[in-house]
Length: 339
Image (spheres, helix red, strand yellow):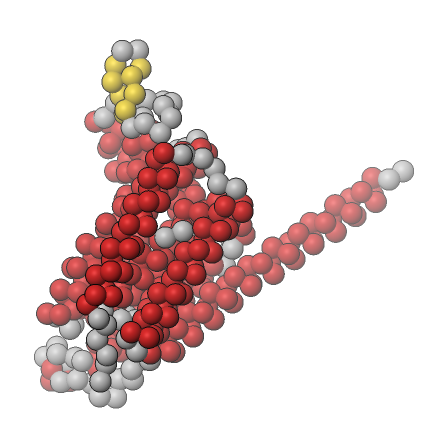
């Protein structure tokens, strides 16, 4: 029998997480700055440690199933959040956001991500409760998303989206930023700054990523509490991780393949789960398909860890080989240039 988490723990956890996010947001508003490597490292380490402590509480107050589901869900959402971070980098670069105010843009983007994911969690939980066949749709969507992840063309990210172009047509946008303000005055005329476009781009990106991340974690657990807390912990520290990784993001060339593999794996797991609880009348007479295997949370956790580790190590190996080959070419060129 599965142990139920104490209600006081769930309520306290939600309050503490919200307070941490509010404090983090107030710090950015009051002191916008570019964090040092040491500061970013300490914050990222703090949030990762906090997630592990929370997982320990899940093991103690709940059971092994709660703990492993949270860990698997957190790692899945964390990997997808790093993928989200790639797009944030493109957006901030495309709109040339001043470095000093990138923290504010990132924090607002993270808050928007939490809002969208919270809404999708409520909707997803309601759908799962009433329509078990939704797992077929979730599974198929994740497999398709994995395929799109592999064949994603970065050149498509270079131009403005259709929505951004429409906003520019109907709203007066200034050419220059005015600090971190949304509104400014140019030649006596009130206008929106490019910061508004940045927030719109971050928001629409978050909306698209929520469509992928929520079905993915529902493939690991159906607990709305675990789904939400895993998402919060995955997004906490993402702002500091942006400054910590810096140019390393561009070097993780195989990361998208690792993420695609995770999405495809969870998609297949969802379809198998849908078959196991099948209620569709045109499949097996509306009866559960007993031979469909159930993939355990421990297996899911192992697949997620291995996929991310292999993608990261392979990326770093490739970067090292390319650097070595480049160094050898420079050495040979220098020798040929000698008289």
